[in-house]
Image (cartoon, rainbow over all chains, first blue to last red; front, side, top):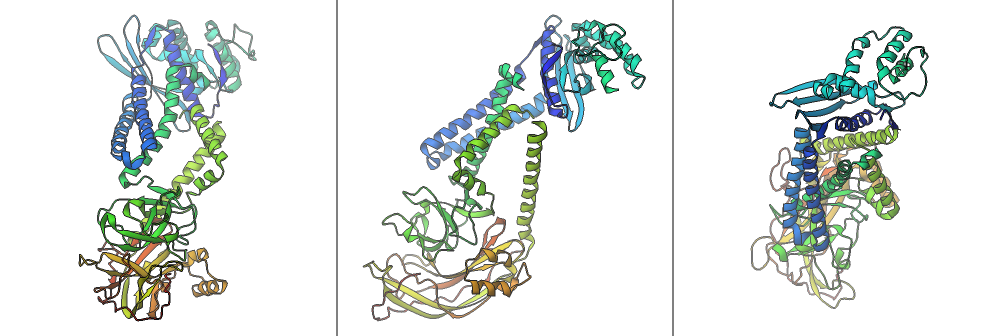
Length: 238
Length: 172
Length: 224
C-alpha cells in the first residue's frame, strides 16, 4: 500500500482530493476504527427514493399520458422537490464534506473527518472532530499541501499521508503510534527547507528509514542508510 | 476512478449522481408541465409557416391555463390534430362562441390559406381541448439542437454516451 | 481527461451562462420602453353576399365583406428587441343569446418587421429592395409603425358556422397588435395599463349592422 498504481493529474485539485478522500477510510479502517456508514446510507436512501418517484412518474406519464395523470404528477413533483431539498440539505448541511465517520473499536472514541479544497489551491483542508467516551468533543482544522503525499507524476504515496494524519490527530496517533512517532520526529526537521540538498536528503532518509517504502531510484545522496521516498522527493524538488 | 466501482457504496453514489441528473431534468420538465397545464410546455418550431415571427429551431414557451380570459383571436396556439403526431403552431384568426364549445380557426402567418385543410376529415374548427398551449415566451435558435438530433439519430447515442462517461468517470 | 473535457465543459458552461444572462437582460429591457400606441378605425362599405367556402362545396354561406379606414401609430412599439409587430383588424359581434362580442374574426392583418428582421420576409425582389431602402442604415425604424389606410379592402371575408350573417347587429371592428420580440415575452394589446405600457388609445369602431343580403349574380366568394 505504499505507492498506488493509479496515476492522477496533479493539476486537478478534484483528483487530488478524491484520491486522498478515498485513502482516508482505507487507512483508518486498517487501524482499529470501525467506519459508520449512516451518513452515506441516509444520503443514498434519500437519493434513490427521489429517483424512484421520478421513475414512477415517467412510467405513468408514458403509459397513460399527461392529461390523465396530471394530479399524480403534481404530487410526484412536490414529493420529488421535497426529497431533493432534503438531500441537498443533507449533503451541504449535515455531511458537509464528511469523508469518514467512525469509532475506535476498543476505546470507543468517535472521529469524524470532513475534507474541503478551494479552487486552484492544491491544499487539503481537514476538519477533524473527535469525541471521547465521556462525550467531550474537540475540533481541529488542518491545512496540508497535497504535494506532501503525491509525487510529481501523480502517484499517491500512503506513508507520508498516514504520518500526516497520525501526527496531527491524537486519536489516530494513539491508534497508529509508529506513524505518529515518525511524524513527530520529522516535524522540527521540516523547517530548514532551503538548505543544501545533501543534508536535507540525509535527514529525511534517516528519518524515514523505518518506514519501508518502495524505491524507484536512488537519490543522489545515497550514502546514508535506506533512503525513503521522502528523500527521493526532496531531491527532485530542489 | 475505477476503484470506485469496487466499493458498493461508491458505485451506488456514482450511479445516483447520474440518475439524479436525468431525473431532475425530467422532473423539472414535468413540474413546468404541471404549472403551465400543458403536456409539452416548451416546443421547438419545426416549420416556416409562422415566418418571420418564428423560424425553424426557435424555442417557444407555452401556457395552457385561462386564468384571466379565454384563448382569443390573435393568440398563437399549438394544437394537435387527431391522427397527426406533430403539433402545429399557428395563429387563431376566428373564434365563434365561448367556453369549451367555442369554435376556433387558425392560420399560419406565412400561409395564404387558413388551416381547414390541415384539420382531420370532417373537422372544420378546433376546440379548446385540441390546444396544448398558447405561446407566451420566445428564445431564438436554441431548439435547433433537437432538430439536428431528430434528423441525425446517431448524434443522440453519441451524446448520451459522452454524458454517461463523463458523469461516471468524474466526480466533482 | 482533466485538461480537455473539464475545460471544454467549463467554457461551454460559461458561454451558456453569459448568453442566458444577456438574453434575460434584453428581454427585461422591454419593460422600461414606454408603449403609447393609438389607432382609429372607421367602417366604410359593408356587403353581405352568398358564396361557397371552396370551389367543390355545394354549401352556400353568407360572407361579409367589410371595407374600412385605419389610422394608427404603433411607432412606440419598435425597440431594439422588436422583431416584428403583427397588426390585425377583426370584426366582433354578439350572438343571439348574449350581448357580449362572443364571435370574432380577423378581416385584415399585416406584418411590420423591424429593419433587423427584413431578411426573414419572403417578398419579391422589387418589394424587398424598396423595403430595405426605406430604412437604410437604421436598425430600428419607428416610422414603420405609422399606418394610414383609406377605404381598405379586407383580406379575409368572414362568415359564421351557421352560414348566416346578413343583418347581424352590433358588429364592431377592433384593432389589435402582437409584438414579437427577438427574445423574451410575446405581448398583445393589453387589457389594462401595465407599468410603462399604456392601453391602446382608440382602436374600436362604432357598432354597426351588417346589411341585408345583396341580391346577386351567383358569383362564388372565395375566402382568403
